[in-house]
Image 1 (cartoon, rainbow, N blue to C red):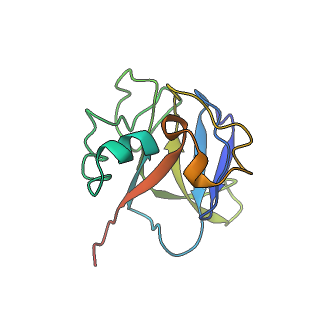
Image 2 (cartoon, rainbow, N blue to C red; image 1 turned 120 degrees about the vertical axis):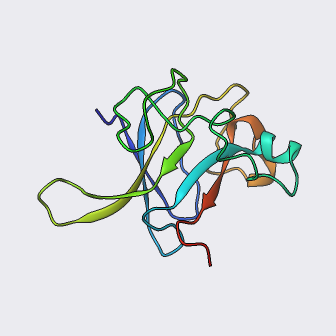
Image 3 (cartoon, helix red, strand yellow; image 1 turned 30 degrees about the vertical axis):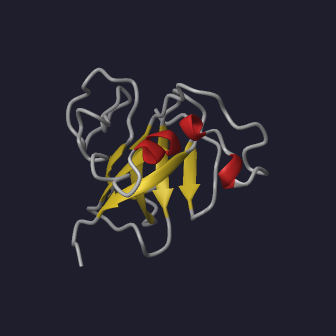
Length: 140
């Protein structure tokens, strides 16, 4: 089952480590069929200019989970799920309300940022703060 939900709108939200989220994308940037992956700012700093180059390498960033990930393949046994396919789903079923969703389970190996929503991004703990990488379904 779904333990939580997060709406991504270009701002920050708190993600609890080890919890499954169905991330809902709004706006016109992320589209159905895109692939997304969340990478830590720590990883991004170590790969400046190439932050997203390996984000879709599933041996580096798992995109499956044990909660019933139906579109990204069989669970690989790795607890973390960094994203994967963005799919259009009717939520709740039968409502005729369609949303764009992707799975997410993050494990923060480092320190968290106290008062994260009130702290400027430049002052966040890099291991526990993530950025979105997107691989468009229809590259333009």
